[in-house]
Length: 278
Image 1: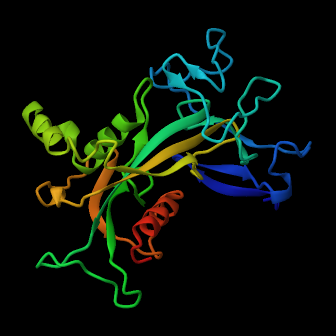
Image 2: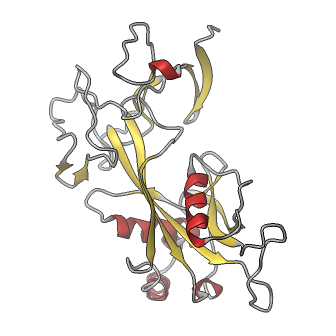
Image 3: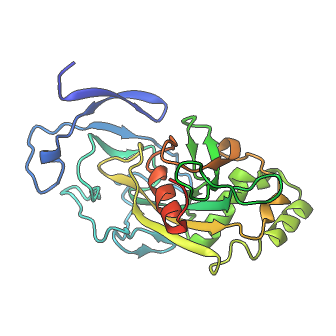
């Protein structure tokens, strides 16, 4: 295998991905021999996914709010190539076209970081023996697609407010709300009514995500918001994995955690704001 090619696990397949040197990452640098592997899942006209760019009826308004679809990037205005494909704002990735992502250009997600201070059986706050700082915990899910622990987030639906996505994705993945009866859902919504409001949410991050699904023409961006359980609401709520998760639990936060994509970056930001152990 040539030195500029590597085998890369992308989605459910292994592809021969072009290695991109740092000095050729940016689009402003000419690289005539660049040969990215083409990966382009056909979503068969799923309503939540874009058509192929070659579709004559597909006329996206790049860098704008395109009807109910937000094609703006948190990073600012992105470029288009000569064929009308949006270009990843961080540069070349070694994979082009849409990959396994639903939209060309930015794919917007929301990541709710639900935290609490670790306490002992007597409800006394626990401190790390070395740092002497309080131990912060967060709710993590085990992703069924890659078998990695992650923040329980998901995609923002077309026309959906990010605040609604944060609550919906958490309830679906961490509490298995999709399998609840209407009465159970109503009761859960009432319990969490004040918890997931904007006043309780602390913005942590908004921007590009170093996600393994990113390509030259489609990439992940997210808004991460922390919701702190200061009133022990989750003492009365049972965690139950659902939707895209196959596991869920409270996790003690420290720098040794191994999390999906760059979720550890968001967790580090959170614990630093709280002045907890890291």
